[in-house]
Image 1 (cartoon, rainbow, N blue to C red):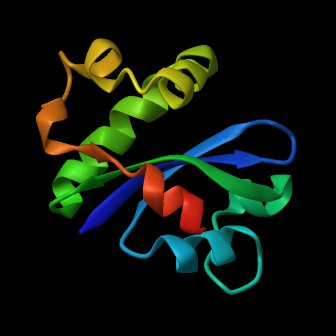
Image 2 (image 1 turned 90 degrees about the vertical axis):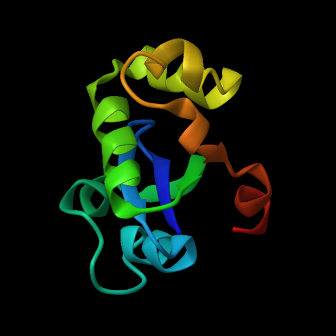
Image 3 (image 1 turned 90 degrees about the horizontal axis):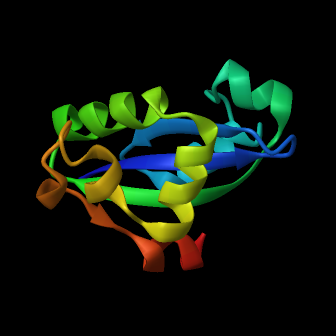
Length: 107
């Protein structure tokens, strides 16, 4: 299983990425282990704001690409309203993604 995520940094910016292991990836972004993105190392990763699961890397990458193209205001809307179909329904098959709210509570 792959996850596409939106991460908030200390400076209120958003970073979008994919992973197979959310806990490991968050630790990397926070600088607690090697491998975090240069972007988040400089801005201080705080927490995942939204996570979607998908069956494979190709699907996760497609969603990541489309989210990265959105302006920040639409990413914030996606986080709060979970309106993936409304915002990206013409770009990706939204039925292939599931929002993972319970995973966020555990992290």
